Image 1 (tube, rainbow, N blue to C red):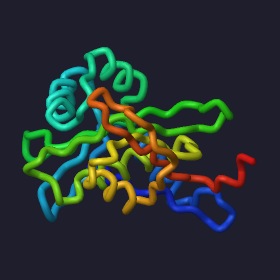
Image 2: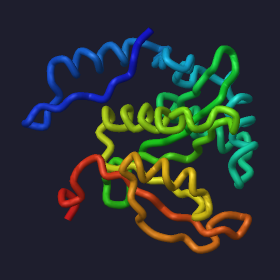
Image 3: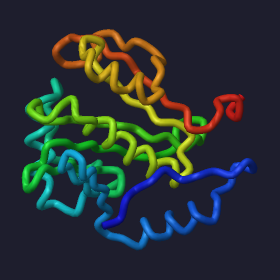
Length: 196
């Protein structure tokens, strides 16, 4: 098993030899896994269409927005390395679906499109671990920031993202189809001053 670890930085801002070696090991593996032996949870990168049903099932149970299969495929086919699943035995208990592209100012921007953890498996750090795995890959791909939207009424998500360093960027009125407002949240991976 390969354990995903954040890339270490030297004072000069370049990757250390140990980080380079770890990065190469991660890139060599098609099936990247990270295990948390203390609670029996295994995290895997998305492997293919056969896992789409697990992702859809979790998202449809927890998120307020209905997504077509084409929306899932848009993210999963273009950025499979930015989708992770959490497993307990053979049961998928969590997932994150993301993308990485350039914004209007030509900055590399990661985007967390979907994050869901089965209600029976919450409060075990699964959501945090999924976000950290995806952000780690975004960092390796030179993302400057990560953004997302979440309902202003979703206290669990707001707390999770705040604990991971995301800050409120703006309020989006009646953003969701159910009429609820959203907060756009942002995590800077490089200092914002670089973009002035």
